[in-house]
Length: 286
Ligand code: SF4
Image (cartoon, rainbow, N blue to C red; front, side, top):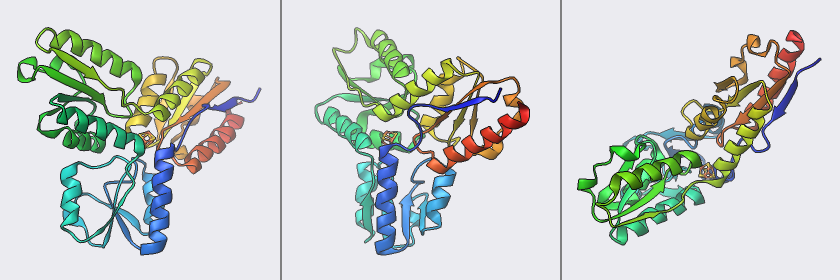
């Protein structure tokens, strides 16, 4: 019997990355070369495809050579945005509206006197931006118990990196509540999670439950792609791959139900290449 290969009900490029790619392609037609502050999304295939159209990433403003700069879906801090103004470059802002909403939450909390705690990865570009919008008292953490309550004021606001999992964010806020009471008088939690990410995670978990093998395709440094693999791993054998050519045929031996999930920055072609690869390998091992 041939193996059944199924895609998660929601997978691949989210509306935020599709929107950014569309804006960049239109701008490239109009202006020619464009530099992006960091990669457009954490996916090499996507970044390489855009580079062929003259859209290439720079690591910082000092590396800028051209006249058109794009802010990526992950957004940027107010400091970075104002630093672009002195450089006489045209700025195209592709910050995802969901990230923009999280930035606005951070800004509002800081303006209202709250210390802002960001649940997320310290080195991630979105988190760096969120800390910038949190003013001088932004703190990033992944574990609510590691925060020193003596350094906080009496009012604390909590937001999340948009692509974190709902379960992890809820767990974080619960631990934080226990750790900060009774020092803190007010704790305000704002749900800044991205629903597109949550839906991809739920769809991946649902498929993992009825599969014997899950393959997650996407960039190794993509936070939301890694999260998909982390969500499926406890349920079933799961492999995270950047491209279809990394599939090992031995994984398919004895497997009749194979599931595919893909991160929010994974291009459609990467998903289709994986389907084709698994279909041909499944025939060989059947
Ligand atoms: S994963 Fe969510 S927050 Fe990130 S770009 Fe896509 S829609 Fe926006």
